[in-house]
Image (cartoon, rainbow, N blue to C red; front, top):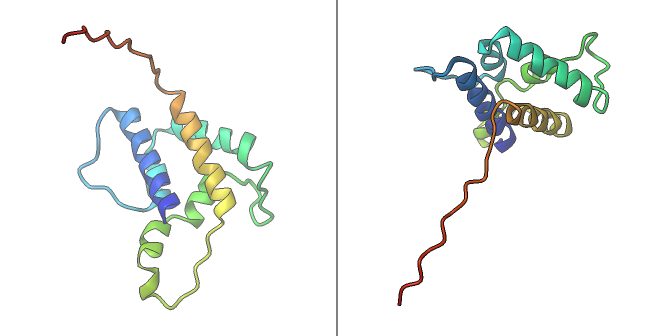
Length: 127
């Protein structure tokens, strides 16, 4: 559940960087959040997925295996897993591929901004 929430937050942060604003109403559907990103961002994430995640976690069910396939498969994982104790249905979650995809999204997101160490002034010594 926390992996799904982390992916949701990462994609929403990506959206804010794309449009320099947030949405008034969000949803928990990972596929829809991904679709709301700019075309350039979707392509960048899909290209990075195919280069880094897909070779290590291949899918034999998809012809053009991309990030959208993983997000679609787990699109409502946060909502469904949050109330798992109330459901009688089996749940499928490919943790290794999802975790690798989340790590890739975070690595790509970190390329979008710059961090700098700010020097903290020394405190004066007063007795």
